[in-house]
Image (tube, rainbow, N blue to C red; front, side):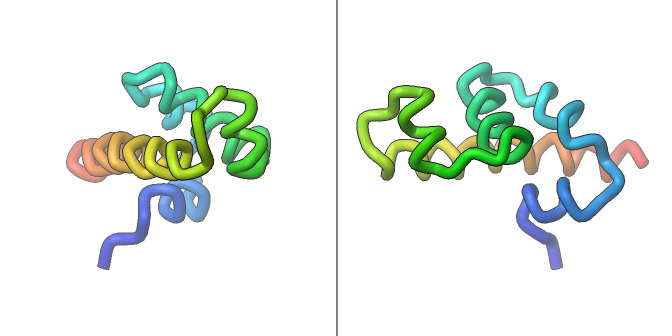
Length: 79
């Protein structure tokens, strides 16, 4: 079974910062950086990035994980 991208990212020896840097969308990179590297809560991330509401940050987070998942799949294919 495939783990969620964030679980795979942080349970492996992969450098999380380098993986997040490969996400093509700037807003997704910023969100992932604040959430996982800076350890900010979703509420704080939402305030920092000026999302309209908390649901918006959750939705963007989901799409950011989709992009991160694509990168992790590429890593597996190249291995």
